[in-house]
Length: 247
Image (cartoon, rainbow, N blue to C red; front, side, top):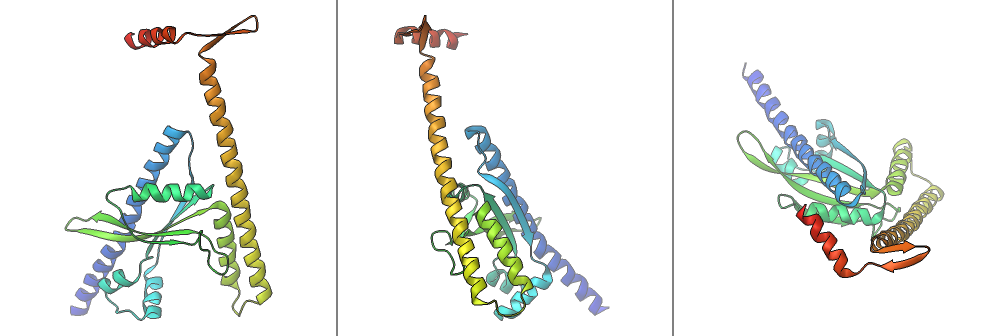
């Protein structure tokens, strides 16, 4: 009977423990959805292609506890394992990565406790991504907890390379030959070059669009009669604006 009670208590504790991380992910994903909608409304552009969240399983957490030689306690796990909850954000362009990062930093109830920029300083194998450890407030029925979520922000090209690289290494049980490592690094360099090219094209197109919008605004202040342009007087434009505001 005592063992049954202990098992029930442990089951309740681990359930509450995992629920905290789930709620932290839910809260962060809601924030991201709001930012996406706001950005789309204000700028007619969405910097986020898609998001993907995951929770480590209790088995995976336990395996990492053994690898890191941590104490088997909930407080020790929270202190030593920071990637129990993970959120991956995929963007179109590198500039979007840092834009999303700044949006998260501006949230007053989030605390960025660590940043690892593998874009400015890629890993030796070519891996690129921006990693943030974010503390998210979670309000339970009887307490408030700050829960850590690992956020990875990367471009489509970075995500494509990382996914394939993981699959290759996951299936390869032995030491990967040096030739394959070099090819993977070259593929990562190619993906980075593609990102730079697409970023340049994106900026050039944005500049063209901005110039067109300025020309459209300027054209509204002119009239054309028999191929001759007439600039509308500023005083007349003020009267039109005044009349519209009084309607």
